[in-house]
Image 1 (tube, helix red, strand yellow):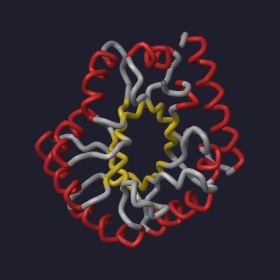
Image 2 (cartoon, rainbow, N blue to C red):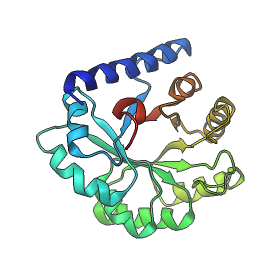
Image 3 (tube, helix red, strand yellow):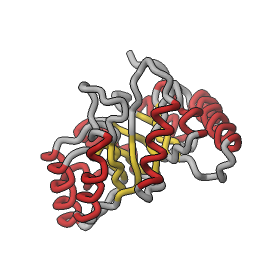
Length: 222
């Protein structure tokens, strides 16, 4: 992908975000586009960096460790978000590398992250992941468990930025986005990490502050 091609894709997605944002009457700058670069190598990512994208999302700590130190060299302002499931034994590495962690979903991970943050004196933003569709194969805490998990995170002094979800694949996502937005409001949280390539405009109209877009930026994975 050339820089020109990357710039066109980036501009098209930003235009869709802005249109949805204006429809919802939301202020400029209230939505962060996270380019999901998981499984893509440096050659695929560099054109987007050259086109001006600065926020990227990865699924795995080890993959990010292999790619990003070199990619960040000479490019100030890059922010890395971990959007995949995190094992507690990788908490130290995640805290060292990422600026935000979107998949905090259990007590053991809260404990591990709090310990890692204290040790590193670094506090990436945390989103609590909710299993909004009650799907056995997906990460996230049960809807009914959120109040207790949030209290644990706040007691552990985690910087809780908001909530994250991945709605069921083949269902209309709007009710799930609306439910997550209501849960965030009820708990005094402003951040909403929701919406992907197929549904991010809907997520933005319903309050998403962070949208996670991969395929629409990078194309279909091999």
